[in-house]
Length: 487
Image (cartoon, rainbow, N blue to C red; front, side):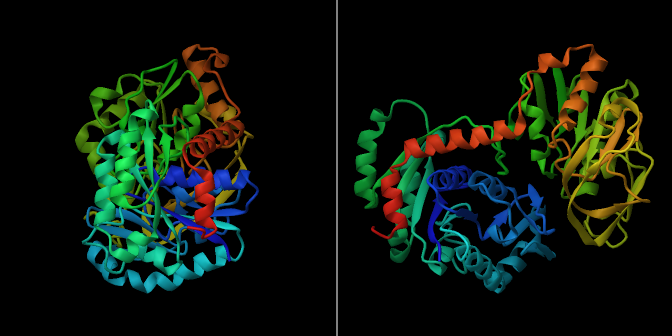
């Protein structure tokens, strides 16, 4: 069976996911077969594997860092919030239903066999399993029946490294307070702490590190710098969604829907030096972009209502009238049609039917059975502004409850308005280039000025940069001693 090590955090967004990805890369570089694991993930950014199972995006990133294919066993439970108090529950890659928070809390122990089957199956195939916790292990109101932090660490006898975020301040209190709130047997599992996202001169930290080690009774395993890497981040606190970007040579706007999902669909568009990708939720921030993207959403109807009430629907229609490229993906694609029907109340939004934006000639009906599959192919003859996509190979995956009328093509077009169910549609080599060439031609800009990169090579380099930061910040001899149960 594989050796294991678990990364837990003092809070959400302490950097657990990226640290776990970095360790996966380090272990891979050191010659080990390594796989990531997170028993329960809550995220709207998901992925569909080759076998048709749905899993959280963080474990996809970690699998990529480890050089292996994503597998639903790496994330046996995925919770996709549908409301403030409820989520769609996905177990072993398949939907088991929508549950309110209390209902899931009362039933979650029923999913332990699925979690353990997934973990033990991976552990039989790999040398090392890097386990990621969720939130904080010191949420004392949630510790009963825990299946993702210390509860899971006990199930698989995993040693723990506890991560705190110094960039937000209060890292010593975070780490000490978290450990102080744990039970004695839980504290014994923590073999070291990590100070993450550090900027500045480490020598200034030394007095605090010594005091922290005395207070906590465990060593500081390392100080990891704030590393600037371009790696997909699924966390709801993602800096990508919060930042405002200066408008560049080509300006692309993604509408920041309240329940936006799979915003990593557009990461490939950010990797051109002179392309800005801005996330906008206010008409005043829209300005005059070259392209507007309506992204996926977990609640298409509710977000369409928000789009209408915010004034953004009217702004999108005006932009379409003046020739701006409009592109909808999944839920955003459904919104662009004539109407959306939900007779079975799949989305529980209170509407059995709602008018769409009306820029594409199609209707959508929601049904109980979910479509989740990987897809690939070649675009046929594409009309309009994006005719350069004709004959280009595409690949990606579909995750949706709605069915649009007739045989849905990979890409539906109406002049300068396009839509697709395919997540990751811009990732295939040549697709982003063709899209941006069309925008450049419309604007009279030389495509070469966009400073293109080889996306796959670029992504691999980002994982190596992350691994360098993790290896340089952590005492890896200490980490290997933990793995080998020498501590």
